[in-house]
Image (cartoon, rainbow, N blue to C red):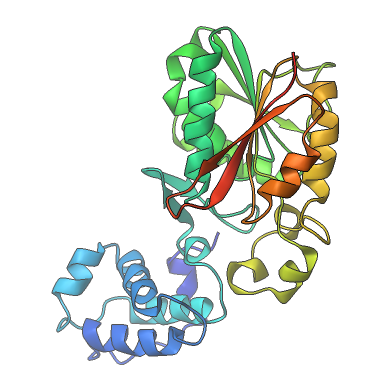
Length: 302
């Protein structure tokens, strides 16, 4: 990931007499065409490149802007639509600093619901249990669960597996797990969905899956972060359900009898996924803070 020092190479250096206030105003104006939050983006980027926080930035509008060239380069990247999380190299998510770059999706706020629902399921399931995070990406979900269940994982009452079809994403997940001291708590596996389960790996009791659920046409439009995040983690086929359809068909073959699946979905996909649920499964929905159906819990028949 490009660091702050690397950004200066091609950056036009601003007149050092420009103040923080001037720089923020100019950056905000430049970002209006590509960002829904231009002022916030400008503040966050300036805080990042100067090593300060937003409070300092907002409190010192009259100070000559530090690292002017680095800031301009960061703003130039953001003006192309590149996500702030990729420019900074991390995303603050669930009180954690998650390393982010183009190897994996940026963790979304709605994915916090997946963690909460999965943690509740692990507690309700009892021990011992096997939990499996499919399409782990940056490893954010597995990381959050590993921190929540550190003791159970250490003494073998819980086994946590995280898989992805992308070796690059698994590298990023490993970096995040190491950075938070839980690398030994999670087994990282390169796999297509749950294929190794029941063979070289156990059948999971809880399966957490944040699979690609955006339609190919929407990905093709490359709006916002979709133009920068890896397509393999976004494209769910013509109706956004290709991977979910295959996952739900295969889950009874690979998961333990009576296993619970916790899935993050796109808005308006709950009805379709409910129809795709395996015969005899029970389906319930968890709504996000906006009242939208975003997480589905599917309990497989025993």
